[in-house]
Length: 497
Image (cartoon, rainbow, N blue to C red):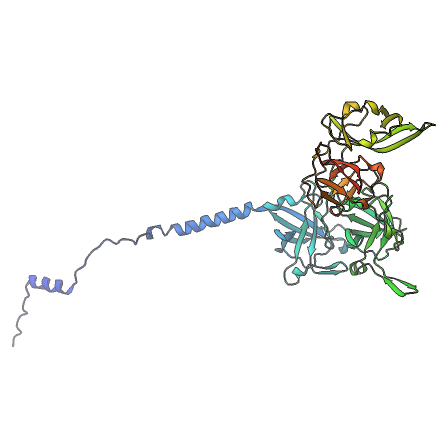
């Protein structure tokens, strides 16, 4: 049996079957989503931001400096540097100093730090550095913020020119004291310590006026020396005759009323303080470097001293005033008599003279005003035409030759009507203690007049003394007598004078 030959499929039908098995392909042009073409900008932007951060960090880098310590108390690289509680830099390295001797104890530790650019001006000659850590002492507790936090390098800026050290590190934190140029620095000498300690308080009438900054043995070992700083507000209280005494002990006295204990305060008892008293005739003001002896206790007379000394008054130049006298002769035997007072320069043109120095008694002979080695007959002295005061005469400078020139202090106000009730007046009597202060409670305003309490006890010899405003230093008037004591005599005509 013969196989039948294969049936031939037409070519056209094969093509049609193949086309039926292969699906049709549609070619489309692919389009990126919106914004996808800019995705390459993301790494570029990240690179630019990194560069900007690096440049900003580099530009914020301030100067590098070194501080030399004997001990660092756990300070490490990366710890902050703070000035008055504000972070101003970071510690970069902590290294041993170079070995100069064979003794390892002679080597110190160098702390390298860097301040921020904004704080670069803090590095000056006189800058002080110390390591803030918990400290417990007689003066209190310090550095409690480092109990749970890291140690930090604390600094106090100096006042000299710019410097990068190396600075000597302080072993302990300095005394909490705002050191100012016009503070008064003195030395207290004592045969022994007598309870004084570093940081102890210096008091006047029980109120703080200064601090004991340092305590050490004298160079010849003969006594103990304490370096004391008095606040500028109370510096005027320290005079040549001021007495210092210890307040850190407890004294006991037996008497008819039993046992008495004398304790100043808990602070001075624990921290080791001293106090001072100034007599009324204490002499001139003390200067920086003055030395005083420390007494073991105050004498009873010291506690009774009540000098009137202006405190907290700006160092302003006072008005020019000259001591003057009215001298005349009277009686059958022509006995010489006199009155004393002051002549005050108002400005370059006018002078204020109290009337009592220009008006002698009716029977006076040869009456003359004497001042600065000059004698002028009072008959030829006439006041300004506009001067209607019965207590103060305004004369021209030409009529009183020989007066010193006017001071360059604040300009005279010549009107005390608007003086605030809290103001302090200063009466310039030319004494060693400076101007006498009249506090707010010692004067009052009534009917446009400034009346001064008679308890101030101004003598007749103070008549005509200039009176200024303690705050501004401006001349307000002069001291004139009043039935109730004394008052301020204005230097311009008016019904209140």
